[in-house]
Length: 116
Length: 117
Image 1 (cartoon, rainbow over the protein chains, first blue to last red):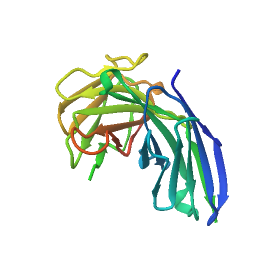
Image 2 (cartoon, each protein chain N blue to C red; image 1 turned 45 degrees about the vertical axis):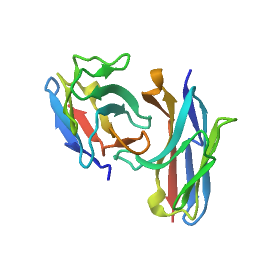
Image 3 (tube, each protein chain N blue to C red; image 1 turned 60 degrees about the vertical axis):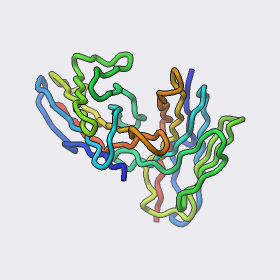
Image 4 (cartoon, one colour; image 1 turned 60 degrees about the horizontal axis):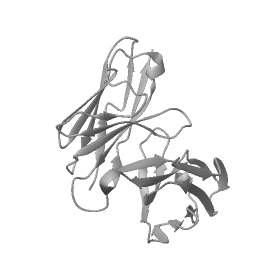
């Protein structure tokens, strides 16, 4: 069964500190992995997208890693800001029939709270 | 580029009425749009896949007669919740996939909060 699990479920850190969020998946055949940030009451916004051959990708203070062998990914946030408070969702895309349609499998998210 | 809008952002309606939610890709064409539902503290759940000019494909357990989807153009898809009930109260999010160029990525709208009284 295709699944995406994230940890921790929630996290509280102080402003300026770093943190790392984890994502484990059992999705096959794997197409790509994305990290999204979802502010409360808003739609998800893409942070990074990585294919099978990519090990790391950065977007400003966000750095995602991917280990396709162990099927694990992490999202590292550097020098956190109050505006980083949000839910971070790991989404894995599976290759559909004929390689054309990619179905997204969503993790349940990590709720991050950055406190002053 | 790749902006997706939704209208309305929030709606409150009485039980038994129908509500229409619009999803637009503002600066790109989207052959395929997706409709998701998200309950509090839960992840997004795919309801249906909407293809321009053809019938939508619904996920298992989603009533197609209750959630009517129309994708009449490459930039607009609508979701109509018919005879809404309080259990339909949720956060509805659409996404759109570009028809050409770039990675095969979905761009999400800001969501519509539906409250059925």
